[in-house]
Image (tube, rainbow, N blue to C red; front, side):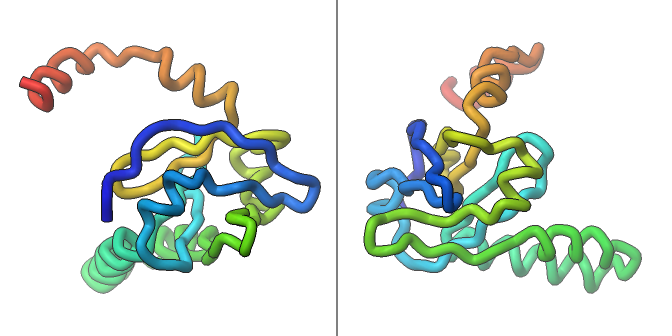
Amino acid sequence: MPGLLGRHEYQIDPKGRVSLPSAFRRAVSSYPMVLLQWQDTHLDLFPEETWADIRKNLLGYRRARGDRGAYVRRITASAVEVEPDKHGRIRIPPWLRQRVGLEESVVFVGALDRIELWPPKRFEEHICTVDEDDEDFAAQIFG
């Protein structure tokens, strides 16, 4: 799977459908994908290859830590399979849109192995926030 990169803003139609950016449709080799919320700020859309690894991690975590079944349940209960329709649109269920504040538009962000779906204002605030460790992290990554 090629890396998922860039950002694209699209309008959400009244039925909760939004066009998946064509660059992302080309980069994902198989469908369906899994859409879920595991952070308060945004949704994540996982291609099947990435989701398979996460599914293994969740199963291993639940088996190793029986007391963490509720956490795994919260993750899987907030997950839905999505597949672009013939027009390249995916449907974001109303309850998922509400949980992260997606209203009229969404910013799709390529995050290497997944696609993040952000409310536009929240995404702008997020990328403008600088962490004190960013320079050290950048030096480790880029040399």
